[in-house]
Length: 387
Image (tube, rainbow, N blue to C red; front, side, top):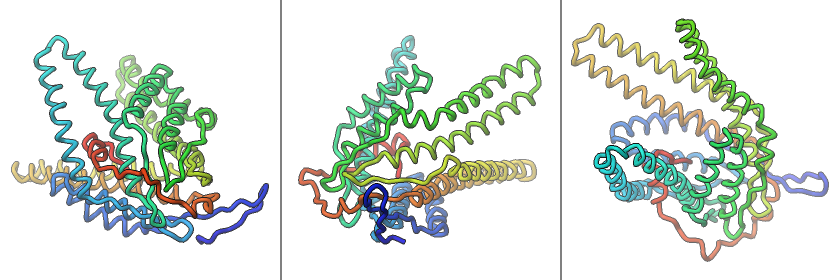
């Protein structure tokens, strides 16, 4: 299944399959053991769980007969997080004191703090990606990344402002520009990355999804208006449900389209990928997650209601807290199952890698530095950590 095959189409082009061999039960056991420990340890076990998840995903991703490896450690993530908190805590305190002292200009001060944290969020995501890439290896050779997190954040802020002004129409070009910057600073050994896809391609493929998003927004805002005109709560509920359904369906389709566009645009030297992802491929994941989420929410609500109705007050409070924590744990498991592992499997198994032979004689760059987990710590402290 991983043997090199030769395809003759406008000349000989080598292609290799890449597969994900991880089993659902292994990943489920990992989550059912780790998610409750996150609660017990007040969230600190997430560094160990995130590391185990990354190790599981990469070690079961097989390209040309060899598995990838994730070499990061939970200790690195914990230290990076603590350093990030030490840096961010004075900033949080200063923003609070500024708001207290300058009551009249508090709105302006809050806006400045908000802009700062949006920019810092972009900086953190870039630095976290740099850390994760350097901890990822294939055939004993690591990926790595250089470039400036500050430069990336400024680009992201500029494109973000343009996207807001154009009501989202600039979003494809924003994605293309930011991905191009990231990939041109990405390396596998001494092979430099690039990004060949364009914003125009994404817009042409996804313009119907933008119409779907507009319909979803229109239904959402029409609900309160109809309620004011008719005083019928059923209209409000119906339109909110319709809006949510349209949004979920179109967002799932957009993510599949975006994945395919991104995967086929990535270049590492002459190595490129082709994907068989269809627009509807991820919709089952999203609807399954939504169904199980509301089922668990309903179960937790019924449990709390019964506890309040039939048990003494203290015991009812204890059980209410228990049901709440159980719901949080289940939500965490559902999210990581359907939006991390299942998406990873679908995406990886859709790929065919071309020109892999050009990466056979790759050497490590002598100037490749080893980044610390500080960027990952910033990302985790702002809740933007990824895989």
